[in-house]
Amino acid sequence: MKLEQVLAGLDIAAVNGSSAIEVASIECDSRKVARGAIFFALHGAKLEGAQFAEDALRRGAIAVASEAAQPENFSGEAAWIHLAPGTDRRALARAAANFYGHPADALKLVGVTGTNGKTTTTYLVDSILRAAGRTTGLVGTTGYRTPKGYRDAPNTTPESLELQRVFAEIRDAGGTHATLETSSHALAMERLWGCHFAVAIFTNLTRDHLDYHQTFEAYFAAKRRLFEGTGAGAPDVGVINADDRYGASLKGLARSTLTYGLKGSPDLAVKKLSLSAAGLEFAAQTPAGEVKVRSPLVGRMNAYNILAAMGAGIGLGIPVEQIERGIAGLAAVPGRFERIDEGQPFLVVVDYAHTDDALRNVISTARELSATARIITLFGAGGDRDRTKRPLMGEAAGSLSDLVVLTSDNPRGEDPLRIINDVVVGLQKANAAYRIEPDREQAIAVALDAAQPGDIVILAGKGHETYQVLREGAVDFDDREKARTILHRKGYAKEEVIR
Image (cartoon, rainbow, N blue to C red):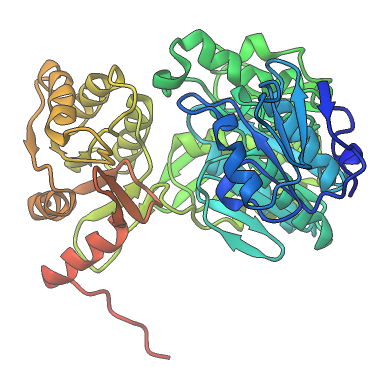
């Protein structure tokens, strides 16, 4: 593709060099540049991409795109594209879409934003679409799945360049729909710029990511961008949680709106909600008629997630019977109230809950399963992230649990004991019973050793993750596998069915 075709629609101050040269690839990481690439030197929070321009040129880049003007010492045959100030990430998104032939235009996109529930809701939407015979892609925290296969997810929502590659892979494999978790980081950083959404879903808003957004208002403003259109027009349908106080301000932004909730009179309303350890059942009154729900997913929070996915299905014109089949067909979501059953006489669940609100939700879900069970909650807080939520997490877990085992999550570059001390403030405020064990594997053993028949043990914070990030780097660590190993060591072993 010619450079001028790649640059179509970008806000450019100047192009120094030929725009007729052939572009073989696009990269925004100089280490990935190969001969014939255009290198987008993005403005970063810690580093300026322009400082890596020379490295990109040495690797064979034929053009550099940057908000910085061409350096005086810049030489050679490569072109320098001077982008208008403040447009580099939008420029990368548009250039990637141009290069891959605008794959998003060939797909119906469903975007899910909010603090909690995004992953489960996307899985439910995808299950509904597949029950309706659609060929789909799924992008989110647990990985990126296309009809051609699965890959791990470095980010909940990938950089625009990778996102367009994923869309192209879905399109080229005959895909018709893609469901995405649209994170606040991705929305603020314009990774979704130029993508039109058939459906935008808002789940809820609670405190998170203030280390990046600084204020709660800025955090919500990032979420709101999905409904404002990300540069490609408002979504066709907005599906909004009417029980969340921030949902009201999103009404009217999409071309049409469906509300859902467990209170009042939303467009998608619940009657006769039944919760048990086996799952949940209810009937939903909707604009498309009554939808009967039977799902193996557990807890009141999943009733919200199911309603949100149901709204997406209705917005996309999926028949009720296929919506019902899709919801019933999703047995579990990795790391979301995922049960670990090795024959032990107490329930063990692994959950991704890593905010105070998410901890309240997962512990409340456990309480709904048994009014008499002791709840043992293990969790930690991430390092190099928002410190202000740590005591809030401690207070939430401590006020609802019978015993808290406080440990490390992903401490990253921080001292784990400093993180733990921040959390202890909240535990003490809640007058909680707690034990401290910084080593996460040892902490899991402490929690499981403390469990008695009928108890519920919640291993919170890491969910589906298969690593732990320490000061020295990432190491293999999976709460699910560690729990199974410890349970086996304690003498439990689930009987295998011999056929």
